[in-house]
Amino acid sequence: MSIKMLENYLLLRDGELIKQAARRRHSDILDKFDELVEDYSRHAVPTEKTVNGLRMGLILVGITITVPAFLVGIEIGQGLGFKEAITASLTGGFVLFLIGACSGTIAARTHFSTYVILQFAFGISGAKFVSLVIALTSLGWFAVTIVLFADALHNAMLNSFSAELSLQYYLICGSLLMVLTTIFGFKALDRVSLIVVPLLAVFLFFVAWRSLQSIGPEAVMNYSGKGMDYGQAVSAIIGGYIVGMTLLPDLCRYAKQHRDGISGAFIGSFIGYPLVLLLSALPSIATNANDYILVLVELGLGGGGVIMLIPATWTTNANNLYSSSLALSTIFTTTAKWKIVIYIGALGTIIAALGLAQNLIGFLLILGYLVPPIAGIYITDYFIINKKKYSQEQDEKQAGANPVAFAAWLAGSLTGYLATGGSIILSGVPSIDAITAASLLYFLLAKIELTMSRKT
Image 1 (cartoon, rainbow, N blue to C red):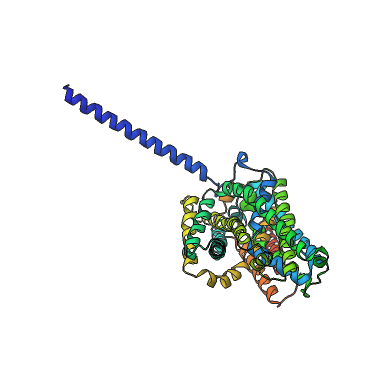
Image 2: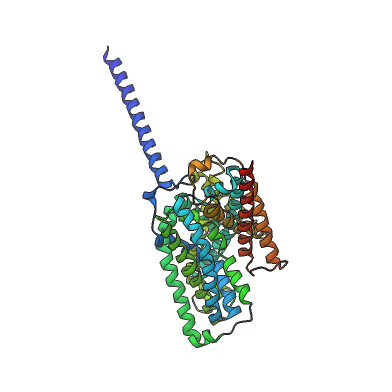
């Protein structure tokens, strides 16, 4: 072999070795990325990846600290007065906790997301349709909320720093922040909540303290309210967070044990949520303002206070995107969940940027009637019909759709809709009426179906 041929051989060999090393590095990077974004959206969460109930509760509290909850707090505070607002908040929180304790227990025992759990009651094909409804609802609220986020940031930067950037700029930046958070799934929500929730809690207590300073504790406690019906107030409180309790398995599947799922639901719905409502009600009574931004302005907090609303909206809206991506991952089973997050995040951003989000609110409110009955069906199916026997192997046998579950879902949704309009009066809380009707009908129809199958 000539020297020239030897040189060529060595060059080719070295080039191939370099290519192989590059491929290995590329493969290692992909493996590490896959490990970082792994969220077990289609399978049970491994035991070693689970966390305790306090961590679960912090995430839930972070989700509740948001503008819609502030508005509910202002409504009940000014409508009932502070004393009655306390009892209404605790009553509503306790009802939510009962539902959350059931859904959280199912998730903690199975380690499945809401959308995998739905497959047991609705069948695999049927659950895809239900999951699509939930995904569209969550995505729609993501688009609506990102507009609120961008608007708050735009006003804060304009008023505080005279920054004249466009609303679309803040909208896109906010969407990127939320998409990047959601790509990493529960791990990112957990880390963000550990930082953001304590800051937001300090801020809310500070606003309440400033309010008490401005008019005094006696004036707040003696405020009688504007005559709002107590049942209507409790209904608003429950309705404001019932979807969160229905979709609680999305988070509580990471609970170590079932008691962690229960304690997470307790912290989120019976402690965190009522506190957020009352800490919103108190300053609104002090300032007599029915908008939280106006409350902050009246208390002299202005732009700095508005900026604190940004992380509040961040945690809540990242969860909207998270729920939507989990739901769609059980429909598009060959697409990685992190890619689904990017696709739907981009779609939600486009909807918001085109100014279509506000037009969706009426449609989203209608879809909202469809979500609470789902909890009644899967809770009844798990605890009574299937007697706590859920497994991935069992689920794979249920390939079709379960007409019994769909009949109960339709009846529960219709009950909630009629109760909201006042056509029927049951408990006075339409979402609870919907859950109860769906649960009872599902139980009766499932038992009848089981009895008939035994006869044949």
